[in-house]
Image 1 (cartoon, helix red, strand yellow):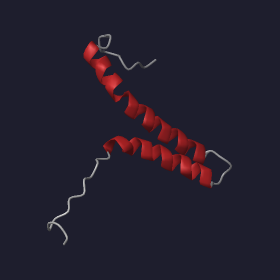
Image 2 (tube, one colour):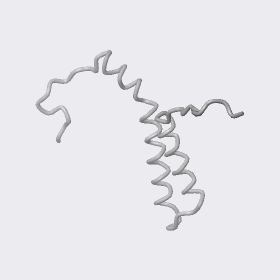
Image 3 (cartoon, helix red, strand yellow):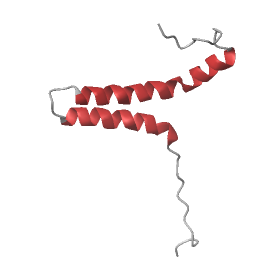
Length: 81
């Protein structure tokens, strides 16, 4: 049987490896939620209903939420008299 570690020495993840996984875990969870919503919409009754579309849209928004940056409105031209 094939193994991922064929030819490689087996080793436990280092503390740095575990810290990196822990830091990335929220992103992984959100990506899995998108995948789950897409699978539900594709394996449903043969048609995509509005609820399935909303689930996928909501899951995608959760993935993108951390990437959003606040925008501050700056007005130029001085005070209006």
